[in-house]
Image 1 (cartoon, rainbow, N blue to C red):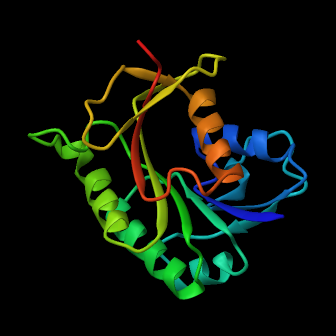
Image 2: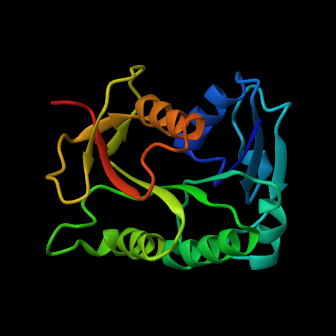
Length: 191
């Protein structure tokens, strides 16, 4: 049995991940978000729900007790959030982190809107966690699963990815956390 906590559980991608994970008998899910009324999933009856703020160290620490995998899909002060997540995971000895960033964080010059994503990735890569950073292209609502990955340092490809495709990849990493350890991956729909 794997214990998975989803930080930012009301997000668009997290919603799709939750819909996939709730159908699996070998995964316990904790949903961590600021306001549980924002959850739009049809079936979350088996999930533990925690209202909280990722920037609150003690609240996050309590929530990570007993977790095996942390999946973070956040917005806001990403660098501060990443630092807090890394510190709490180190203290609680939770090793696997899946963190969503953005395409283009290694472009030069770096667009100002992407600086928080780049800073978060830098914090995570400097840690000793078994992280997988995902850098998806722009999201679309297509009902398809069709994606490819690029590794850090390779040219990013494509311009879009379906939310369902990205959620499928995240779910595969949750199911097999030994894959993509300490990897930073671009994700896109094949051209």
